[in-house]
Image 1 (cartoon, rainbow, N blue to C red):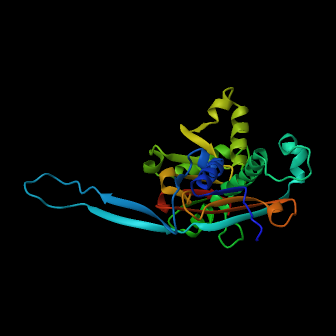
Image 2 (cartoon, rainbow, N blue to C red):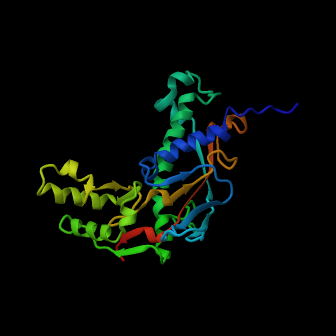
Length: 297
């Protein structure tokens, strides 16, 4: 009679979607609402944009159609990625679960706190990488998906501003240069994002602290516009755009999203735990002319 093998823990489908949703939401760009999320993509996603010319004209009797409607879309294909790791259960014994695992060296079960610890550690690691790859990922690189900045650099319609190495002495002028490149139509939108890298924000705080007693509160704004720190941006970088036009795509409820935790003692008596994570991720935008990218040459 063949040996019966039972998988103790397997997260798939909707539970996997919930876990990945939590992981993605830890990324600063997503958590702070600096990008729109399209969560249930299977295959390719299409970013749609409708342009309507209002056709405003002097009144006259009758019906004379005017104006224009232009329906466009941009295809974005999220990249399928995976994480395969193997961990010795013994390494968790003293750290997480001596009480749950008991005194026996024969660990037949994966305690709940071990599963939670593994997912927590993986979640923190993956969310930081997701945040970075949203902006700087290179699709040709193993384990990355194509980021927004490489797309913007290749897009002639994006408004490019040649930047400098940011210091407290020049940060106000350089932030003003970036803001002045954005149109009034873009800056007046409710979802307008004035995003800066961490070193730009630090320089701005230091510049204000030298002359402004309220620098801590005032540093949240520049010329009345909220300043958002984007952890995934490279140093000396700023991006200004409407958040509704920039999207992160994934398939939270798709069969392509999978998390499996397996106790290998059930198959090879190795004392190891294997964790498999599979998910899709991609980014894209429409209306490059509404985006300002400030970066050093």
